Amino acid sequence: MRFKLIIAFVEDDKTDLILKTAREHGATGATVISNARGEGLKQSKTFFGLNLEVQRDVVLFLVEEHLTRAILEAVGRAGKFDDKPGTGIALQVDVEDAVGVMHQVQQLTSIVEEEI
Image (cartoon, rainbow, N blue to C red; front, side):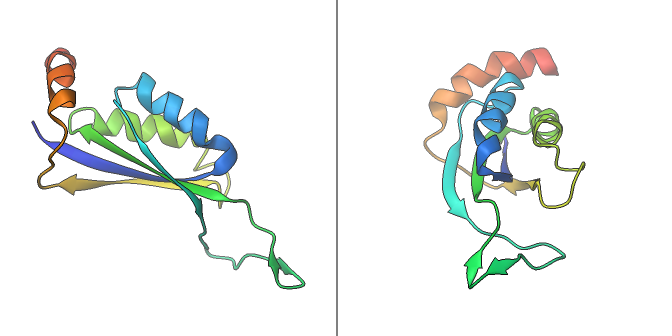
């Protein structure tokens, strides 16, 4: 079984929605890294040296490769990433190898067989 890593940078008030959406589309778990900071085309505004930007979370999903595209698209729709600049981004990266996922492989085998 092959895996991909989906990395989503989301506004912290949308993290729970992103987690729920990914699970509904086949993700079996996630890791959330809180209080990330990013900058897009426009620099963030400051007020007396304090940032006025929304806090972000980085959400990592290790998912089976056949489920990746559906999860990625669903996360993008749920987070409204294409609606307004700065709402978030998601991307996928190939994973060459992973350990500690055998319990997921057993659960995913039947799900992936249905998808294929």
